[in-house]
Image (cartoon, rainbow, N blue to C red; front, side):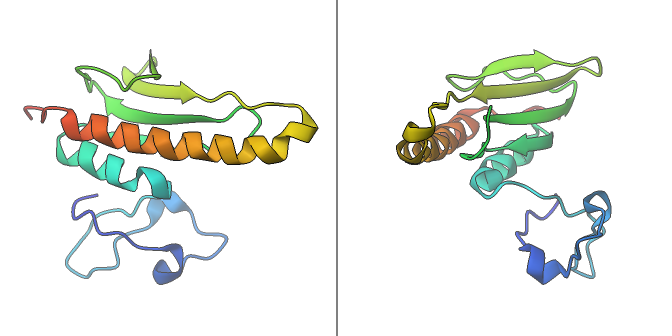
Length: 142
């Protein structure tokens, strides 16, 4: 998370048994960790971290989930000046802020095929809106 280099899983030679918490950057001069990020949220997470809004976890949402949502969890004591439209904010016992957007999905089996495309469109539009939000945030004074 220092150089913001993007790798795919295959280039890192990760096997099924690897623990993602301990993958190090393959560049010889770097001692940073490699983190897994949903593809749609990569530019958002990079933007937030460059501005000082250190992140821990995220998910852009999955069209196949029963109760899907998008979220970004920040490191403790990160104060956000605002949150994206449609999101709620939660603060856990460790003072970590999570912003979350819940999506509603039709549960009627016959509507699922049509709804999947609409739902996927909502996820993509949410990622674009969240990126705009991240770009508009002021940098944190660190």
